[in-house]
Image (cartoon, rainbow, N blue to C red; front, side, top):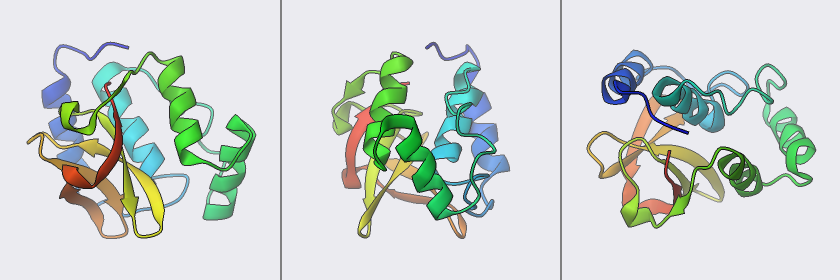
Length: 142
């Protein structure tokens, strides 16, 4: 997977455009936010298999289970990143636009390393939210 020449401008515009977009399963959840950002940067839709197939949390869990045999976000991320040659890296080696897994309360979710390289951007019920990259558990290069 290769980022486009204009990936920085494209990603910045994407983040600005969606800054206040609220979390919605199947439309704008943690997975689809990150996959949409990957598509903006690379032109590759890594979420094609999931799009339009669920609209709530139970539906999302069902799709995770169907995709990789268990309801594990980490397992799905591992499969998608492997299939798209997105290598795992240390959290501190994650670069702007890379994918990260973060703990949010008792759950995990996907986020994206912000353009400042210090924060992780996640989809939330109030729009895009920033948290310190130190809260990331795992990371993959895009």
